[in-house]
Image 1 (spheres, rainbow, N blue to C red):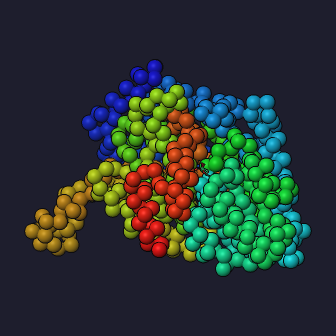
Image 2: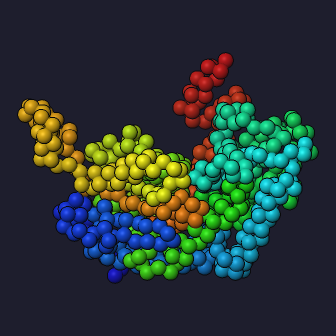
Image 3: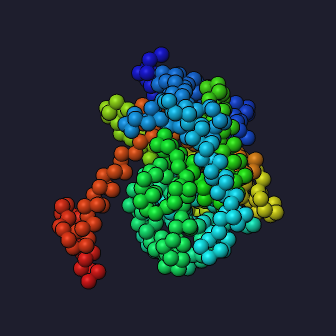
Length: 539
Ligand SMILES: O=P(O)(O)OC[C@H]1O[C@](O)(CO)[C@@H](O)[C@@H]1O
């Protein structure tokens, strides 16, 4: 089947009457959950509450073959320059792979990775055991990771998920250049006991370098310049710039340019995870991701979780025209999971031209947003139940909590399952009327309220079940989404590994800085007017 034929067949299925129906499919086939549930790396993925059918799945997998999704995956694993616009490989799998497994051109990628991992392990052990101490001889109790985007979101999300009282250190994440963030954090820290990691792939990111300057000055004010140096480490690919910033070479943990920022939590960028939660937790995270990598590389297409998740997204975005997706982890510890996926997915898939530079002929990445359940239910789920456009949902559920409150956990899970059921099944007008009759409402009230109390249903969701929230299951979960993103890049013919769209604003900000200081006019009239208003208000 050619590419065009495969797209045509899929889109035709999406146009068939009842294509988006879910409730009737669930009712017609009691075995649907079993048919559409798959497992890998300890995770269970349930796709039964979508409108997928065996015919739709066949069409999606035919499209995957026509689009060369498996070939793209294999090129990625082989270290080829799948990131064409930056002429780079995308070898985040090497960060969690066994020794000798991955090459980037002539480079033994795995050797570089394992060298850094050994250095990280040595550093973490020395800090935890008090061999490396602060300038005044104190043990380090707190670590501050200064970074933004991929140099913040991944490690911040993982630490939030895995950290428990009694773990080796407290971790803090400073991302925003808004100094209110630093001013809120500063009073909670003792400089004598604080280790500072400057995390930046490029080591040129304006926000990170501004915050690093503030924090370095804060350290130096109490510990002196030389003392401050002993409290700093860098996580970067840009070794000359880390040296220019004054970070000792043995405190620089490097990685290569074939690690994309949003895929970098497995690299030295994850050092704050290892310091806060322990090197064992970090290794567990890598092991979980490796298990998902192995599944992704070897599982047949009709049981391959990342491919199936990507295919489901193609069905929703391209065949059914749904422009957004919500991510609802029913676990408070995953409070930053949606934020991580926002960058992972929207920076990767928010593209309007193909890898060849031609305009894409179809929609690409949807808007991704989310909050933990049950909070989300009391916020935006109204729109997802009864708004005019279906918004597919990813539910993430954890079977066993790490607290002793079984009743609370049952309430949490009951709510997650209820939301999935309500979205899929809805409530017909007849059901709404019958319920109001049972409640004894008068007929005119029933007539008045029936449309409002009717739920259309047929609103899709996928559910991902983790046995418990462990480093291993979290690693597998994050890797699942990373590989989904790679598959979608291939489905859509776009480069999921570059991010040129973030550059223009950065460049313009550089030009506007002197205008805000009153040293130069702003070139854009609307900007100039706002600059003038700001300067007036600043007096
Ligand atoms: O790690 P760096 O180089 O400071 O970049 C931070 C983030 O900035 C971006 O380049 C976007 O501006 C992200 O892709 C990246 O994760």
